[in-house]
Structures are given as C-alpha cells and as structure tokens.
Image 1 (spheres, helix red, strand yellow):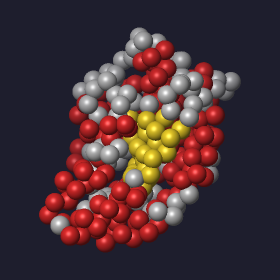
Image 2 (tube, helix red, strand yellow; image 1 turned 45 degrees about the vertical axis):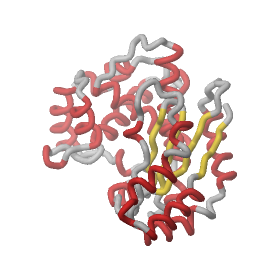
Image 3 (cartoon, rainbow, N blue to C red; image 1 turned 90 degrees about the horizontal axis):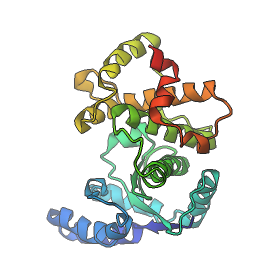
Image 4 (cartoon, rainbow, N blue to C red; image 1 turned 135 degrees about the vertical axis):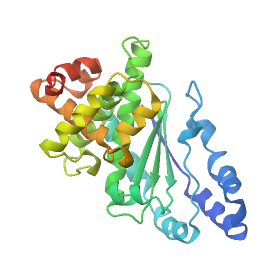
Length: 283
C-alpha cells in the first residue's frame, strides 16, 4: 500500500510565531494551525468520533522552538522508506494510501520523554499519528518502532473488522492485552535491539500478585477498567503499563509453543485462543 507521510512542522513554526504574540490564545491557535488543516484527512476512515486522539497542544514555546530546530531537519524521505519496509513485512492490500502524520510533542510530558524515548503513537482507523519530542534520548530510533506497533493495530483491525466482518471480536480487557502484545512483538521482531521499558518483566512474586488482580477483569468491557489495567494506576497499586507487559508475555508464550506461526498467521487466531493456549490461561 502507498504511504503518505505528513509533516506538520512547518505549520508548527507558524503556530509558534502566533503563540509568542498571544500566548493566551494557545488552544485556539493550536487547533487552527495544527488540527484543522490535517485532522479531517487523518480521521476520514473513522466510523465514529476520534477527536480524543488529536495531538495535544504544545504549550512550552521555548522548548518547542528547540524541538522544531531539530524536527525541521528530519529526513522524512528516509523515514518513509523505513515505513515501507515495515509494511512489506506484514502487507496489507489496500487501494487507499495510509497517512502517517508527524507532530511535535509537549516537552512537559515527562512520562513519554523518560519512559518512551519521546515518541507516542496512535492508530486512527487505517492511519497513524506519531507525536515526537526530539529532546528525548534516542528518539529517532524509536519512530519506526512506534510506527510498526501502530501499523499492526491497523492490520489487526482491518483483518477482524473488515475481513471477518466483526465476527469473533470480544472488546474485552483480555482482547485489548493480546492486541497490544501482538503489536509489540511484531515491532520487536523488526527492531530486536530496542527493548521497550513498558514491557519490562516483573519479578515472579509481583507478577503473581498482579495476575490475581488481572484475572478478575479479563472479561471486562468497561473503558475505565481497561485504561487502569493497561496503562496502570499507581494509586490503585497497578504499575505503569502493566497490561502491555502481560499482553506481550501472553503472546510470546503462545508463539513459543507454536514456533512455526508467522505474524501474518497470528492475525487470524482469536485472542482468547492465544490466551488459553498460553501458560497464563492455566494459572
């Protein structure tokens, strides 16, 4: 499939100049310069509202100026070539081009800066948004990894919602974990030198205690429950991104038991079967 990479950095320069003149109007300026020109195209395939995935306004203007000095020099052509290589590894036949929109990310988002190397992705029904903070360590190396993760979401969604007509989809927390685990393992297979911090293993005692909590919500369809158990809730004793760690572990165990299964073949296997045939389905 064709890939259309959209760089929003020129618009960000215009936004920065306007925001310096009137920093009280930042929300409106961000929307007019950074959302309105791009979002209708990015979200055009979405069957329902996806505005919650819109990139957040960058409010630290001095940091943004430094970021744009770096981002405007980013070789988008080379990046697009890497995206094509990733798509080739897990192809999708589609006449519609995929849009990959590159946005700056607020430097005050310390979680992404310190734990995710400054790169945050979102899948928007066939398209991808990548938010980048070039003031983070190794940020450039993680852009293709994050794209691979989000692209896998697009492939999974196309397979189950389009090719399978939505049959077999559960929309449970368990399914959410498995989807994220597949996406991370696919990205790791292409970039074995990159080890995501969000997939760090827990020591056995902690893992056992967390799994007892997770088992109680595997079939939950409540978005708040999904959010807390995927991204973590420190106040509730749920570590950061614990759902990603368990999702990867479940899928990895399944693939270890079925070493001949490719990522293409894995797409067709129901998430519940992946879980039940992993060691986690028996504990």
